[in-house]
Length: 70
Image (tube, rainbow, N blue to C red; front, side):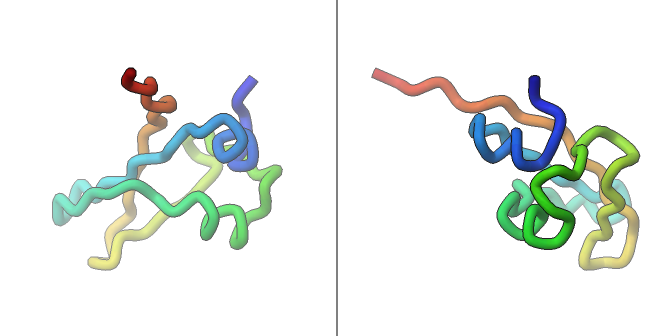
């Protein structure tokens, strides 16, 4: 079960952040989020409040691990 920031890191999931106000988007730094909130913090919607560098509230999506190419 993937429920926390620590779980995301352990299982190679990623969070992709995006700003609906300015259009900026990128993968979030899980190590920084874990350092700030702790590995036990849930990642589910409403558990994290993120702000873009433009000041607007940002949103995020979960991305599963990428399959390894042969």
